[in-house]
Length: 98
Image (cartoon, rainbow, N blue to C red; front, side, top):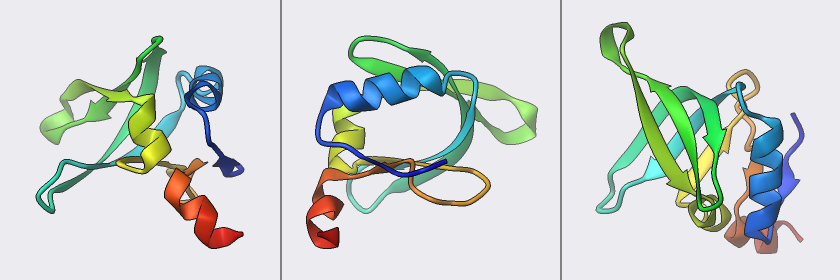
């Protein structure tokens, strides 16, 4: 899975539409130094949010919704579960790489 440089919400939405049903690792910055990491499957893609069904303890599942703008800004990061690489390069990181 190659990294995709993004600078527009539509780019993120289009890429996630092709990834429905695929496993991802999600790292979400919840503020106040609280970061949550989970494994899950992209379930649906909506105009403003996308839904990830995440694995909970004891085999239970829950659904989390995330906004595309949070992926764009790096507040929510998506990773390939096998390689560990970013699926999207957050906007702030693009400036550092060029």
